[in-house]
Amino acid sequence: MTQPGGRSEGESATDLAVVELLGALAYGQLRAFVAAASAVPLASDVECAQELAGHAAREHERWLLLRARLDDLTDLPSSVLERQRPTFDAFFAARPDDWLNATVALAVGLPMAADFARAVAPTVDAETGRLLVETLADRDAFEAFAMTELRAQLDAGPKAHETARRAVAELVGRALTGFQGALGETDALRVLFDEHAQHQGTTPESVVKHLALEVLEAHRRRMLALGLDDLE
Image (tube, rainbow, N blue to C red; front, side, top):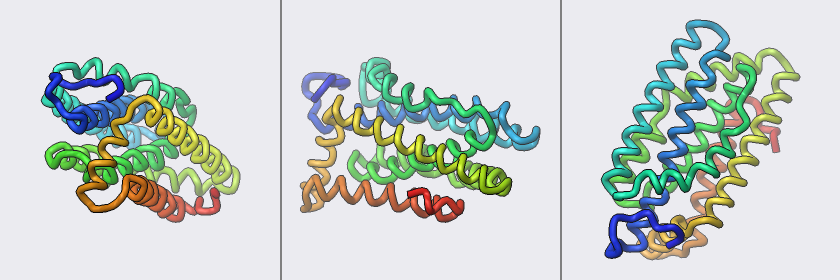
């Protein structure tokens, strides 16, 4: 395992892979909390800002739950998290400067992370999988808020639609770059996909394809709902 983050030499490759994946998702959640909180001053009005602040507070609670689980699985949680910083800091480096771009990040970026968490949850142990779904994939209220706010911004007309399309394309591009970079730096996903494929009686390639299709289809449905389905 590249850059192991486990507790002892007796831990299996799968144990280490779960730790690496959880560390990545946990640090990503920490940055998601920061992104949500940072968008509060951009909100369209005080009521909207207050609601977003409440969602941001819950994002912080989700981070704490993920961090607690990481603490349970490894004696080196800070080292595991530290390895994730370059990838996620690069993804979140481009900060929205207005409410339209902020709502794109909230309505598209966070749900993409939730889609990924939902898709990879079956590849890890049951307790960690449940936690991933509960913390990252169960954001209905936040997603509904973000979608409503983004639709309101899109009502401004064609220019807003074009700005949103451009922002979505940049966001998806950064996400793909980050995912590819993560794959090159650790074999955690390969280990988990290989084991899951064995249990399912299929191939790792099929597992990856299924995951990609799940995430892309969910993204496509979201774009249809927003009227941005001609993005591609």
